[in-house]
Length: 103
Image (cartoon, rainbow, N blue to C red; front, top):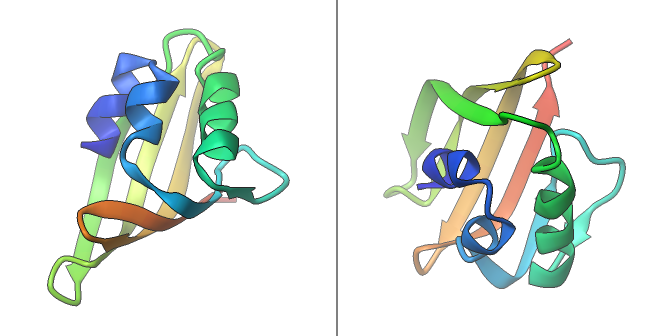
């Protein structure tokens, strides 16, 4: 769902996947985004990258589908970037998401 939401380029759709008090350490962010308002603003800025898409490269799911980690690839008009990620889910919502560029 998260990968698909990135392609939709709608920060409200992507933010809806997060719990109200979720924590996001975004791939292209310098600070934590805590709560849906801050997460919305992160994605609003991220979607300024023209043609932004995300593709899942690898996925590992653990603990009864409550933890997912792996690698995704972002592409946009200015190039591409590989990033590693971890998601923690509770009640079907993302409660913690960490992503960083692979050097």
